[in-house]
Image 1 (cartoon, each protein chain N blue to C red):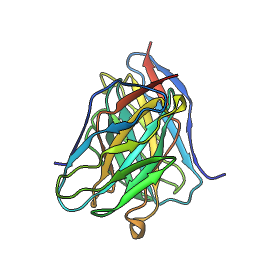
Image 2: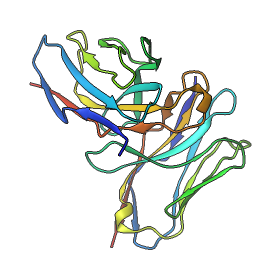
Image 3: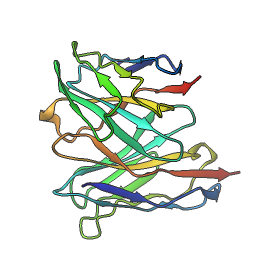
Image 4: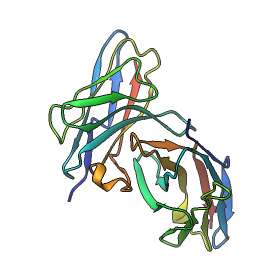
Length: 115
Length: 112
């Protein structure tokens, strides 16, 4: 079955450490997104990529970085500059711009905590 | 910028009660509108969508109508079940980034 796989499910970060969250999709979607969810709140956009080798900052990009070297992969790095990284991180994808009204599909998320 | 406002929860109902979760939005242009559902510890699942004014999205007994005149997309279900207990998010998709702007979510608790 096609879908989005996020790993790991749980991740712990030490002070001053960078950690990378994996997101892989086999839906053949062009666009991929990273969102952050804090308790009792909606999701906020961190980064997005409409096409391979291109990505754009979202609304809360500070302290995060991404790459898009392959269509199916969009890893997110939480750097030590992100002072409050504890959150639930969700990756999503959607078909290309020719399908502008198609919904986003979501992975099951990675929960990041500080040690 | 774009924004979505939905009623705060938790909403607690008895099984077979009628459900309404209010959602209003502010956006330029005519965004697509969505309802997503999140079960504990999981990602978001699409519940229904509407892409233009007066469209009605429906799925699993849930319905919502895109009302441009009131900028609303209220979620309704005629008879809720215990299995409907979850957090429900209203969202709009902007036409440029095609990213979603979410409301803060409404937790629904259905008691047997």
